[in-house]
Image 1 (cartoon, rainbow, N blue to C red):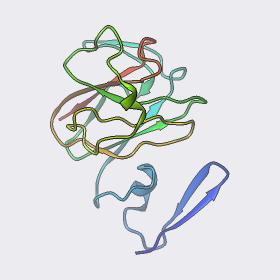
Image 2 (cartoon, one colour):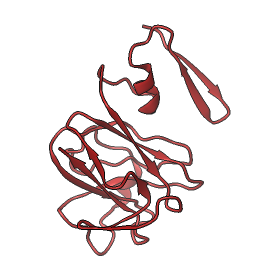
Image 3 (tube, rainbow, N blue to C red):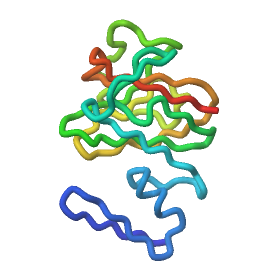
Image 4 (cartoon, rainbow, N blue to C red):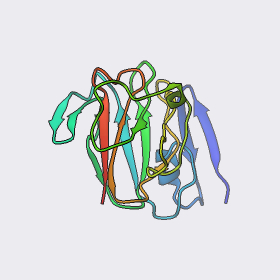
Length: 159
């Protein structure tokens, strides 16, 4: 199995003559995924994804928000804005009033939504996060280290 990665400016193009799952690899930011894995791309953009009042609280800055996915879906966050953001896990069933994040949120961590403290790390403009697998049913809250009070917050519902 061979892959060719061509970088044109800031755009990565994946060419895959005989590469199974090539579209999913490209959507995941380049990480190899299990064959047939569904990928949910979450757009990270504070200005482009306005607030929505939900039963979970105010959600903003991510789309779709909330995201509803099946167990096994791979989540990839993509920063479509011109400044850095994060998508970092929040423990608990409600959004705390003050930012719950430490400096650790600036480093990528975790491979599954059930991993306590997962984070996309600091996503520069145009960057994509590591793939995070929706491995366990539940509601997963997250927010941006830099813009939590804006409120840049999101939720993923895994069924």
